[in-house]
Each structure stands twice: as C-alpha cells, then as structure tokens.
Amino acid sequence: MTAWAIDVSDLTKRYGGRAVVDRIALQVGAGRICGFLGPNGSGKTTTIRMLCGLLTPDAGSGTCLGLDIIGEARAIKRQVGYMTQKFGLYDDLSIRENLDFVARLFELANRRAAVDLALERLGLTARQQQLAGTLSGGWKQRLALAACLIHQPRLLLLDEPTAGVDPKARRDFWDQIHELAAQGITVLVSTHYMDEAERCHELVYIAYGTILARGNERQIIDNAALVVWSIQGVGVQTLMAPLKAAPGVLSVAAFGNAVHVAGQDQALLEQALAAVRDRPGLRVTPAQANLEDVFISLIASAQDNFSNAGAVLASKA
Image (cartoon, rainbow, N blue to C red):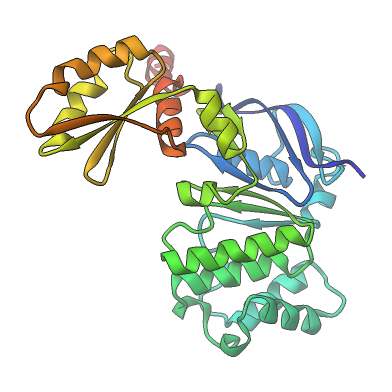
C-alpha cells in the first residue's frame, strides 16, 4: 500500500485545444481532508472526475488508492464515493429505494444490511419512506452522502457538496466528514466557503487549470506574503473601484463595514492608500491577511486560460 491515497503528476485534460487541467500534481495522505478551492471553471470538477475514473487524462500519470488512474480505473470506481455538485438520485423514489438502487449497482452481497447501516449512519432511518424529491437541501445532502458511503469506500470525492445548504446543515455535514476521516477515509472536497476551507487538514488552490497554492491554512497565508490594510468609515464602498485599479493592489474586498486592501509591494500599496488616508471619517489600519484575502489576490494575478479563446475561434472562422 502507498502512503498516498492520491498521488498524481502532470495530470492534463484539454477541450478544444484548451487545457482545462494543466499538468497538475496532487498528493493527499490517507485519512486526510484536503480542501480543493478555486473559482468556477478552474478545473476542480474535471480533476475529480479524472481521479475517480470517469474521465481519461490526456496526459499525466499516477495512482488513486494505490491503483493506476488509467489502467485500473474500473477498480478505482468501486473504492471511491463521488458526490456530484447536483443531487443525482431519483426524486420519485424514497430514501430507502434510492439507497437500495445504489447497493444493486455495486452488487453488494447483503443489500438490506448495507441500506440499514447507511440509513442509521446518516440519521435517515425515521425518514426512509419519504420521497427524495420532497427533502430539503440538507436532507438531500445526507442522502447523497449515504449513497456515497454504502459500499464502504476508502476515498470520498465531494464536489461542492454544501452549495445551497443552510449553515446548520453545513456544520453537521462537516462534523460527519471529520468522523469519517478519523476512521481512515480520505476526503477531497471542493468548496467556495472559507469557513469550510479552515476545517480542512490541507488546502489546494487551483485557478484556470493550474495549482497556485498548497499547504495548510497558516502556510498558505504566510507564503502569500500579503500586506493588508483595513479601511473603515462612511462611504468606504465607493473607494473599492479606484483602489482596484491602483498599481500594486492585488485585491480589494468588503468585510462588513470595512474594506480590505491587499498587495505584496508595501511601497505601491502605501501610494494607493495615500489618497484616502486623510479623508474625514475614514480610518486606515493594518490588518492580518486571511484566506479570503489570499485567494482573491491569487485569482487577480492568475492567467485566464480562456482569455484568448475568442481570438482562437476567430482565426478558425
């Protein structure tokens, strides 16, 4: 057995000549929770689908659960639980019927016992006869996770599993994820929520098909070497547009009644702030960088792999 649950390098996938995943290297240890972050269209879902054998890479190699991602993709599928962005079960079947259907797909020897265990594990027993289509977002999420776990996978690939779910359901979900990790199950989870990112053991940030940062929360913040200032006061939001256009400013983001301005060049940042420091009613103070500051700054400095798509299409017309 390998020490890595996921160990891939140079993973690449192209569509129409454009690399949506560009030579990615990714390693995740067994029993770890790895947060996979990045803007929409950054390649997260494509990467996840290559890892679980649903897509064949155009280039690259590696293993998932010690199995070759290309030659042993079928075997990988039987040991991975994949939770898609959208609810993928049948609305007109009950919770139990949906789980029984998934158990049939995996050809489980004792389906009834497997379904009973999945229902109990996710607190679904009392609702097992309820139609899936009548469930709230949080309960649909529980059902989807139960379906992912019914075949006792060693790796969970969760693609934005808490999108549109209320805060209480999100917290319950993450408590369950940590319980699973404590049992030795590896989790790769994509998310846009910074509070969820903070609950991961390690983070990988991808933008436009390329990994821009990796490590734990503290490492990523420290490595970004951002200088951050907080501006508070009346009408502070009106400063956001001109500050974004100023040289040396990587990100400008509103946090409640304050605006964070971040960059890596102290001198340029001071110049950008000089025009607002003396304005009546405003207070400019140093601030600590957080994950959101870092990720907004990263995407601001990243190269969009679709930026020349229009020119490419025009040249072919």
